Image 1 (tube, rainbow over the protein chains, first blue to last red):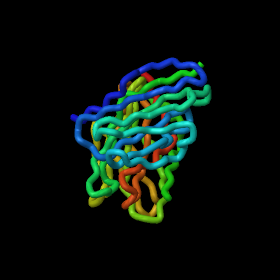
Image 2: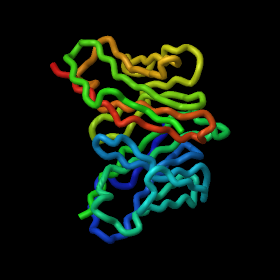
Image 3: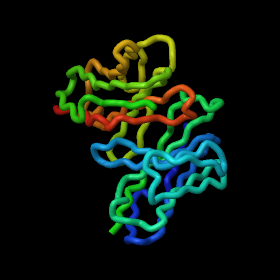
Image 4: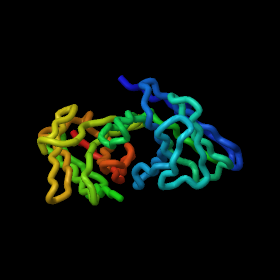
Length: 116
Length: 114
């Protein structure tokens, strides 16, 4: 089974801090994703990576950056945390299949981040 | 661009009753369709997927969904629900050639009551 591991289940940080959320997958997947999940808003894509060092902005990239130095690891960075970034963050991965879109995504258990 | 609409934000139902969770999508190209389930304090896990072929797709835990191209729908059904099916359900669509990205609906919370 694919395992996607997020480094923290719960995290509390202060406004203005630089925050790192880490995600590791063990199935050699090319694609990795970061979403935030808020009640009533579903999942919104923050950033997407389809290969090492490659990234694309999603629907809500403002205030975030990402890093993918190794294939198995995808990090989300909040450059200067603000209270409106309090949310559940979900990491996911999927197989590439020649950049087709027919592979399901595999999710981690999420990081619930609170910014005080 | 593609979009997904889950028509019900909350669906309460009694145990052993049938349930249908509705999902409509729009896309200008061919699509792949997915249903995911999220139990409390967990990530999403795949229930079932439609890629091509038979329009009736069977998934885990007794769920099934039917792809209707003319109505652009992909409704999820279960003939008899259990308390353990209480969860949030997400419909997702991936457009062909969109490099693996999916668009998710806002979710439907299914609450099964005894």
